[in-house]
Image 1 (cartoon, rainbow, N blue to C red):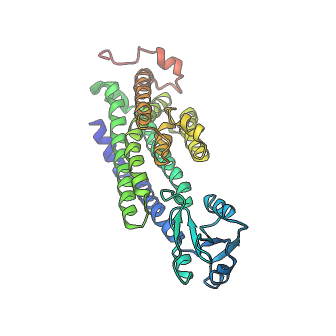
Image 2 (cartoon, rainbow, N blue to C red):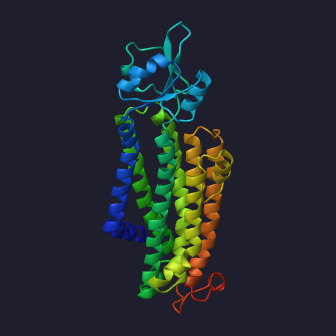
Length: 354
């Protein structure tokens, strides 16, 4: 009954509906935007001087390279989209590209030369930036928005003294479990819808190997998200139980906000650091975003997400046990803000059957 009430209230909340639509649009745009951006004129490094003139006439941006090695370096670093270099055949030319030869470059040449893909499985630079932000933003905003809602719901029940009626009919731990389950179900539904839109939109655009790389990452992200959300939701519920006024939630929730925000920014800014990402993928509060990103990048072994998920699950169970005791000790205290120590020690205000 508690979970049903939480779901019903949230489905009537315009903020929840707006955030869901917002993330669905981001999921759609993150796959379509790179395809749109790829339509601009390509930048080409040229080693063969004879090929420069027709390329410039075709509207391509031409960069001179002294030799094949330098041209290949420019392509690998993403400074140019492709390079035109001499072929083994006297007078011939060939194209060096990272994962796909630019269509406008091939069209600009009178005859299609041999094409050598240096890294056919590479992901476009645009997606390499967007995907870490996308994974991090989904977990950050979902856990934050739903968490604040849980804290506000608990505090509202205390402030109106309706909690005294509720605990007479429902065990305190059932109230906690219902709030976590109800909001968790909605959060999972929201993330599943975002994942579905992402996969379908990927199929509509020419993404090469991207869908094969992103599929396992999305598949692992969902269980990591669920367990990570439960961990944080229990902390938000305790935050709401510690205060008696809505105005006090912001100050009391500062530690939880740090636990949500720091992993988000760490993953976004350190996603190109393999060592940092390896560490973050095993830290419970950052694992829900760091481990799927390592799977997307192909940097994680098959056993690593299993181990990281087990560590996260163990941490979530531990935090749930601790949160249940703190929640019981603080829920019925309405004489101002309750300290963690007081909530931990207090047994007098809990119903006798607990």
